[in-house]
Image (cartoon, rainbow, N blue to C red; front, side):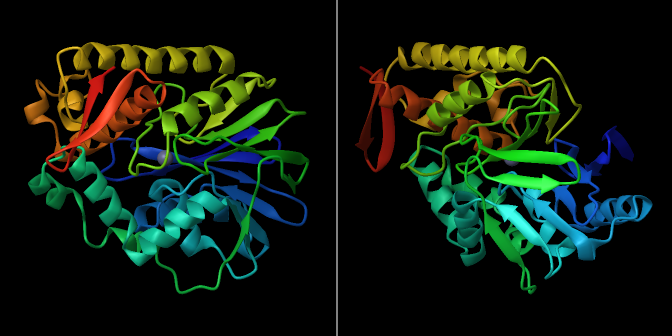
Length: 325
Ligand SMILES: [Zn+2]
């Protein structure tokens, strides 16, 4: 359950029940004065039990422990609300903290659902996706101290000097930790070894695919020997992986251009014709949550094409329709 990756740096595989990702990686660094936990997992019993057992085994005192959170997603962020103490500093970032605040106010999911509906997602299916209690994972009565980190900010823990690396794309504020002397990158969901990080759009103001591709270039330029991702195994060959991910998105963009070549369509219709790595015979049989993710990805790619001047967007009968220019 606990694996030593480098001196005083441990990986814990935290299970994610009912989730296709199966588990999330939490990294624990034991320091002389303060410890650091990176992405503790999800705020549910199964994750808490594994983390508490691992922390006991490593003799980590939570009263002397800080946290770093790569991004706002529930599987990375939410357990900090349970494990964090009022003495902990929780290093996070402003754009994703704003998302957490909106989730807590109940407006984030509502806005995302409406936006995706305008992009063709069936209204009936939206009701099946949203668990009315889902924002409960983000609630906390504790007085926790969050510190907003910017690109280039430094966190010292034990012998490690981590540099915060803003890698917008998977979420707007997504931040990796780079350790130059160890040539090590703690990559969250920016880089994963055998899964493609999902890039989805849930509001019209952003262009996450453009940001993601730029963030890949930013990491490509660094000297990295070992990537410690948010899910699955560690990997080397960082530059090769970045090249693969860029090729994947280029293929997606090409596929979308050929789908739009058949005529104007909304994002849901485009998503239904794309190839997805889902164990299902056809789009009709996709689980509704997979359709939600697929539509979010299609919108992100369509927005990218629109901003490049390859596609255009129109509103017809209150629905967003894309066509090739
Ligand atoms: Zn994520």
